[in-house]
Image (cartoon, rainbow, N blue to C red; front, side, top):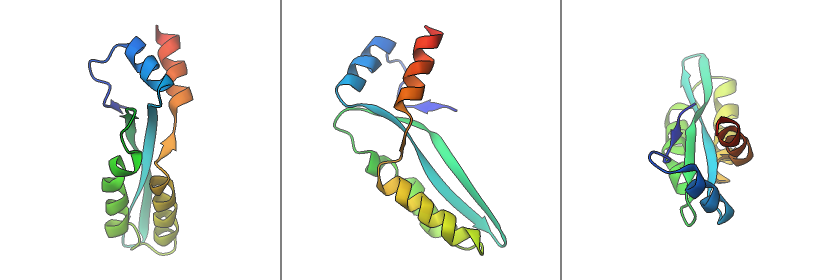
Length: 105
């Protein structure tokens, strides 16, 4: 998966910002087409200290609200799941990403 928001940032700065509250999150979204429903994760987003993860996840929340609930029976179920995850600031994957950075360094 691609990480959005870390372009050009050195690993040391990222680790220092994580100590100050930065995190890596992914958001969920749901799209339904007739009887088919797709639940997908977004790219991983780097949320700097002071930024709102809920605001970053709004496009995925709106996409799910508009296009997700159509498919029966999974559309409404997956849409609600996406709304719950996104309204909580997304799924925090910071430990996994930091471990990956440390392995590659």
